[in-house]
Length: 138
Image 1: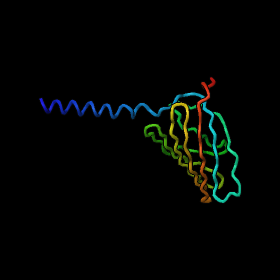
Image 2: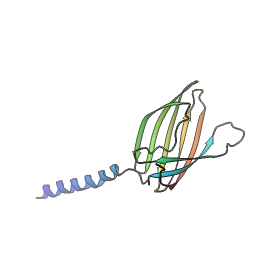
Image 3: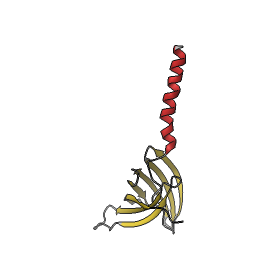
């Protein structure tokens, strides 16, 4: 009887621990306004922030798209609680640029950053924040 109780308790605890892993981050799908601030070491002035909109879904949680002129490949993606982590490699005329990104969702907002290392060794940081502004346009 005691062994059966321990076994059942272990199963219940395991299920309670695993279910949130499949739920995904606390993010409401829809159209998001995303603001990016770029930080480049050695730049004599700060670049102005850029804002764009993007439809973000549970299937496509990465809030930043590569430039159209770049050929990029997602090499890893991981979800830990409400945080999405990824690595992307982009082929440029100068060589391969590697970007590591991280965003944490909070329902209808997020914040995070990406760090990109260019082929010449320059490290560029993008501070990103977003807010849901409505439904995706069909």
